[in-house]
Length: 167
Image (tube, rainbow, N blue to C red; front, side, top):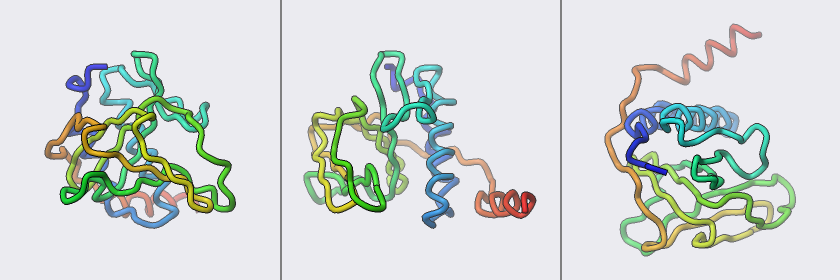
């Protein structure tokens, strides 16, 4: 994988455009926008497989499986690890932690940064119905940090307009 070929300003712009979407029902849409942007701006290096594979979002041209997560304030400048990242919320009882991907791509929407970490280097935790992870300094790479190139679209308004047009 050549991460420098990725159009990170456009990918982070897509992430930035979904900031107004904060409710639980909006999370799926926000994730879908980001997944499509990552595939589109990857220079054909990542193929989205999330619709047909469980626990993995992309297959890379390097043969590896990638999972994408995004959140705010993942990077924690005052401690030796990132914030916890929710990997899966089972809304009942967790089925446990199992390896379904090789590398995690974590997009920090606050710092406009993209972190990459091997599955084996993730600190995983299972609490009730939630599986989450965090990354420790020195065990992940920051593969991009740049200013987002955002489109001037009111995503919340457009999504609401779409919903209203369907009902």
